[in-house]
Length: 298
Image (cartoon, rainbow, N blue to C red; front, side, top):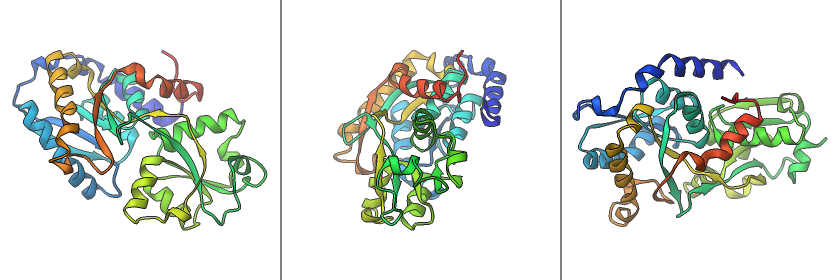
């Protein structure tokens, strides 16, 4: 287990008692802390994008909801584990970390173009000479530069790392330079030929193309994963014990889909609502964590 995993485990164990308190003991007027991962290129845009969702939840739940953007998926998992966050919209791997170490629980999964799943991918640029994933993991790819997302990212780190492991590849030895950065930066640097290849996910690539941030002809997909569960709305262990609250939260999220026709800013483009979810939906991510040794079996 690397240092960041040990730190997360320590934080989770150290706060387990506090998180076990039932949410019913909290005052109804106490603000709910709503943490959101960095889905947009910067914090200001991220806050602006998800503020309508926070306001909707506040109205439906009858409590103030304080929105905060957390820079990394791993950081958001830690904040849910240590009590800094009550509700989180987080990537699948971040959710599995928070569930594994602090028993956070998913309540809903976000829908993208009506589907609760997405894909991890590896991209390169058209001048790299890498025309397939076999090129990347073979002699043509040896010594090249490669970008992962942060170590709390599902598609940017865990899933491609699992793939490389299955192929007998150690990225730190195979590639000449390995960097860890944000998804938006991966696409920007790959399309600019500053990095030979990198890990990303289909939703991010599509959004960046649609927004004119990158050109589609400069981002070439050479590998795509099996379907992965979309981002989770999760709550702390203590809050999950308040079954009435969880029911109201799920209802508030479920009604967003129909509301989007009139209130288009409730979610970013291409996101179409939420569906009730449970922990079993994220088992494939847990398996990848265990298989890579990133997580230790309980």
